Amino acid sequence: MSDFSLLEHASDNIPDASNMRFGIIVTEWNSDITQRLLQSAVATLRQYGAEDSSIHVRQVPGSFELIFGVSQMVHYGHVNAVIVLGCVIRGDTPHFDYICQGATQGLAHLNATENVPIINGILTVNTHQQALDRADGCVGDKGAEFAVTAIKMADYAWKFQH
Image 1 (cartoon, rainbow, N blue to C red):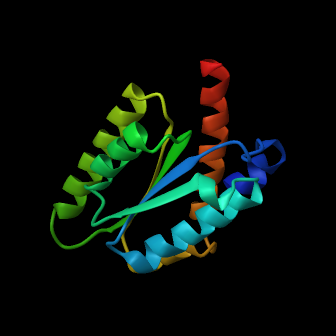
Image 2: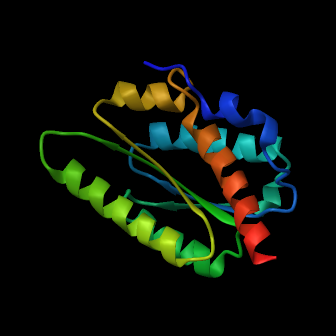
């Protein structure tokens, strides 16, 4: 395992988020994981200046439904970036592969065709423990990393649009 962390790698050049608005779409499925990711992402956005009134959280049932949730947030949420939080744990059937592939393709399409950066924060893991390790910081604090990526990409997009 690597102890590499995006936060350690890039903590000195994170833009001020005080004038940014963020959407967060989070799944209800595997909520013990996704709620940890959400708490960390929100805390990180606040740490870099985002106000609570500028952080809009919406829930969807599962990871495939994230695509529609993101589409709605992009079109009606008036946000500078959207963070997508989900967790898909491999099981005994190919359902894992279909959901991961479909969600990834859908989010990639939206990311390429919309003017708002979309951060894919769907954990795709083999075991529940692997998900916990990524949500609790044992193998990186993924919720915080997704938030930092959203701040950086919102800043990146703003520079091109203004």
